[in-house]
Length: 96
Image (tube, rainbow, N blue to C red):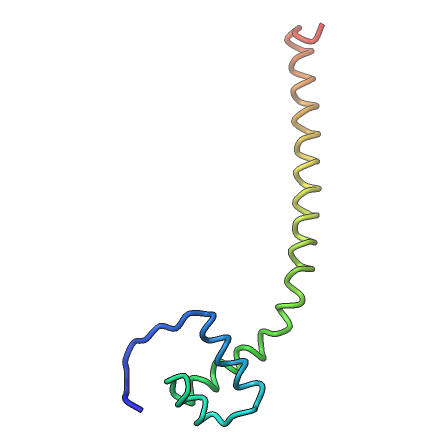
């Protein structure tokens, strides 16, 4: 395998190679030859995939919770601004 410097692989390519490594149907050497990537790089991507796998399933729950929290804050702010507007309109005589 010829050495290449500075190649950037897409996340989709990395995921494809890492999944192939996780499956274990082929050796790292075979995968390295198939995908033209160094075996150590494949091992690194495999470790990253396994380490981040829990985030795939937990990310949606966190996003939903963050959205609910943000929505509550925005509703509170809308209520506050509405009250301030009504107070100022009444104080300036525009509310009659």
